[in-house]
Length: 211
Image 1 (cartoon, rainbow, N blue to C red):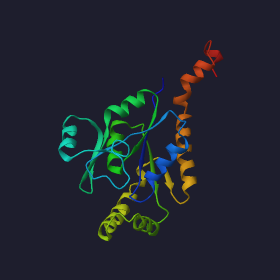
Image 2: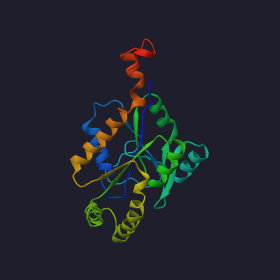
Image 3: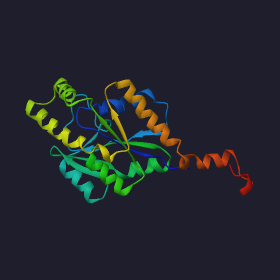
Image 4: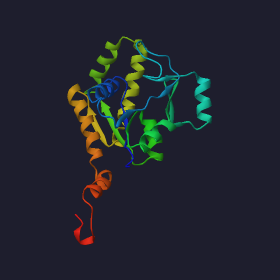
């Protein structure tokens, strides 16, 4: 069985990454080969977030114990809170041939690339910084000072766009979903992913009959 593809999805806060991933999974919920890795975090749940669904919410002590046990594929500290990706579940899904989405920042993406160079990166950005500020204001979850900090961080994060394989400018939401879906399907159609299937469907008798 071919291993699945590890797909890193990153974006500055407010670019619409979480909404796109959620809509992608909902719209193509019949795709049994697609999985979303649920990260661990030490931050408090936001309104509407559910433990073990949106994140595995843990305290600092438990997170640091997991670090000591090498339980994370990657982890980082962002805005004074830890975020980490479970190594065990991701590797299990990949071995089962599942494509795994990782919702992580550029720092985590670098850690993943060192361990899994074949991972593919998708970077999502808003159509402009003005639109990003507008989206953060509409959330109504952060104070003006926090929003200003997120804007400054967003500018720094966007500078890392060239470390990714695919860029999605999230201007049209439906088009962005289709773009993400196209990336996944394109990766599945790569020669190294189809080689075993072609050999099974079209057995080669000898070197002269190879396709």
